[in-house]
Every structure is written in structure tokens, then in C-alpha cells.
Image (cartoon, rainbow over all chains, first blue to last red; front, side, top):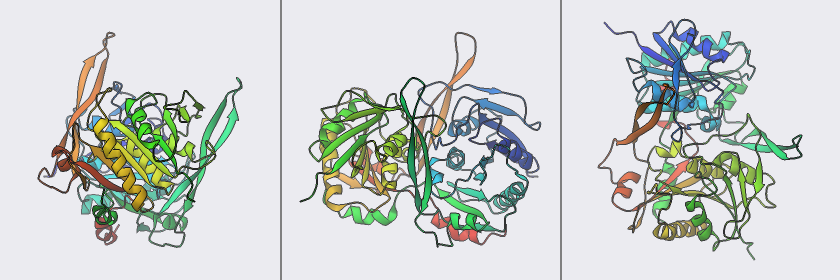
Length: 253
Length: 253
């Protein structure tokens, strides 16, 4: 008899985020669930780790009756903690999200949601980051939850190659089908808004917009999202640019 | 006549790190240099960005007579700031380091040094992260500086494909040649050391060791470093796992 899988649910929006609770609600039907999340928002924390200060992790009020822990660490710290004696078993799956806001294209690099999913995959288990294209703290996750369950069920059935996770982005409203995509090539164009504080000192807010270098490429995640599909991008932990490797090997340093 | 290149020097060890000063010292001979660094250590901050609080950036005492700014942001914030009206020109090159400690293998994902280099490449310009395999705050950079100059000169001569940066790791002592490598496949095995604070509360320190899954692979960066070579790995910003893409496209979700 197969034992019940143990599923770690985490996120980067912090322990009180609605999307976290919604993800717990879905995962309860797939196995034994535990939550480890951060006491504050860790949005944009990428794959940050905390090595210069101590971590504190403690049980808090259960979310939907599953063991729930909060820490002062990052999403990656939380995954690492979960694999190191916090629980009696190591997780069989790591699911991260549901993020309030999309993490398509290059956002995979900045996202704490994806930082956690990538970290899960580094522990050799199937891991998925889920994001809904709605930044609203009170976003409606009802359609997203159906998509999450479908993707997760497919991962249970098919497995994932080791050290590969999925970046799943779900459009607002009622989505069409699931499309497997590649990461869109583009970048954020930043604008820093300058302001003056009440003490006469200057400060700047990061803002900006995404510049898509390939608006017409139908195989990209942003194209899918714009056309109301759920995008699924397999993500690797090997950042070597193999296309460039051969060229540079011929350089005379 | 070619104009003098404008080189941004940054790091993740903070404005007071010796490695930063050493990097400025080398780069002065290649062009006009400016420094933007963080007021505290940002080691392990990966590609973190700061969007939930304002950034402050201000000129401070010049390092080796070049314009020097410190901020309360992350390495990636500092690169973004440098491309947004902090200077009269946009940087032509971003160099990050010299990090106190190596950033080989999977450390590329956690490293703030590499976060800054990756961010530079996203702005479409040649970018390099340099790390010395010595965590000592007072490390000897004299041999490393020769290596840095050789790699940088090669990048100036050959260019780099857009959206590709280099991860350069330099062994301690007197290195052999430069070897172009791929990222080593492996992971950190964490151990959290539990302690009790004077108030009776538990806390944990992140520690651990790197587990190399391919000790014998001569084309990897760790193999190079262990054998006293300088490793150069081209790094991409596209995290799509193309090997897996086709397989998942056949899934019935």
C-alpha cells in the first residue's frame, strides 16, 4: 500500500495571505499537508537565503486544521527548514503559492514563490509554483483552484524529472485550457519614482512595466496568459548558457 | 573615436568590502568607473528586489577617487538604480564582486553577486560576476586581480551575447589557467544548528555542505576550481527546461 504523500505548502506572500489558505484547501484532498510560511511578505525575495542571522520557526494557529509554522526566514529558508527535522517526514511535494500576481517570463528570477519551488526541486522532489494574475489581496481563487488541482494531479500521475519544477500562471476570471510554454523573452523597464519625505530627504519607489521582446510568439507563457490560457513552464536549476559555451571556449583569455 | 566605457562596479558584500575596492582598482584602467553598493552585507540575496519599501541612495566617500553611492537596496536594486538616472550615462558594463567566497555550481542561484551580474545582462550589456574562493574579510586578492583583468579584457574584445553573463570563480593562491565550464550539478545539504537564546527561546543557524553529484566531470566549474583553475561559466536568464518541455506537452492535464 502506498503511504499518503506529505505535501509542503508555502508561499512568498506570508502566512496570512488568502492564496496560501486556498492552496492548503486544494492540497488537503491530495495528502497530508503542512504549511511553513514567513511572518511577513517575502514578495520579490527570489532565492534569498538567510545565513547572517538566526532563524526562528514556530507553530502557529493551524490553517484549515493542518500543521502550520511561521518563520522569520525567506521562502527558500522555509523549504530548507521543512527538509531538516521540522517534521517527522521529508516532504514528497513542494507547492508554493497561490501567489497574488503573476510570475510569468523573467519574473521567475525575482519571485519568492518560484524561489521556493526551485528550492523544492533541488531537494529532488516534484515542486510547483502557482500564481494567479491578480494582485488583489482578496482575489477570487475559485477558478484558479480548479487549475491547480488539474496540474497537481498530472504531476502526481506523470512525475517530474529531478531538479525540474513547474511555473504555473493562471489568468484572472475563467481560464481556457492549460498550455505548456517556454519562458517569454523580455525584461522589466524600471522607473524609480522620486519623492521627498517629511524631513526633506529623497527616496525612490521601484515601479516599471514589462517589455515583451516577442509579442507574437505563441509558444511563450505571456502569450498564453494574454489569451486566457493557463501557462505551465518547466524550470531548470542549471543556468549554464550552453549556446554560448562553445563560443567562449575558443576565446584566448 | 570610441568614447571611454562606463563601468558599474557593484557587489553583495556591501560598500566596505575589500573585494569591492579591489575590483574598482582593476576597472579604473579600463574606463570610467562608478560604484553603487549596499550599506550592509547582501550576501545570499539572490535576485531579490525591493518593492514594498522605498529605496534611498546617496553619494558617499569615493572609493579610489571614483563616484561612489550606497543604498539600502539589494544588489539587483543597485543595478536597476544605476540604469535609471542615477548617472548621466547608462553603464556599458556591469562587474560584480570580487566576492569573498566562491559562487560556483548551484550557488549561482543564491548569490547576490551573481544576482547583480544577471541583472546587468538583462539590461542588454556585458556583465560579469567575480568571486574568490576565500571567505576571509582580509583575503589576498593580488592573484585574483590578474585573473579579473584577463577575463574582462576578453569580454571587451569578444563581447558577450545579449542576456548572457559570466560567472567567474577564482581559486585561492596562485591559479593555473582559465577554463570555460558548465555549472556543476549538485546541491547544498543543509544542517540547521539549533541553539537556545538567553531567554530560553530556540533559534537555528543555517549551515551545510555542498554535495557534488558529478565529482569526476572535468567540464564542471567545481572540478576546475578544485584543480586550481579559474572557472568561467556563461549564465543565461532563460530558466525554461527545454529537455522537459516536449515531454510535458504530451501530458493530458
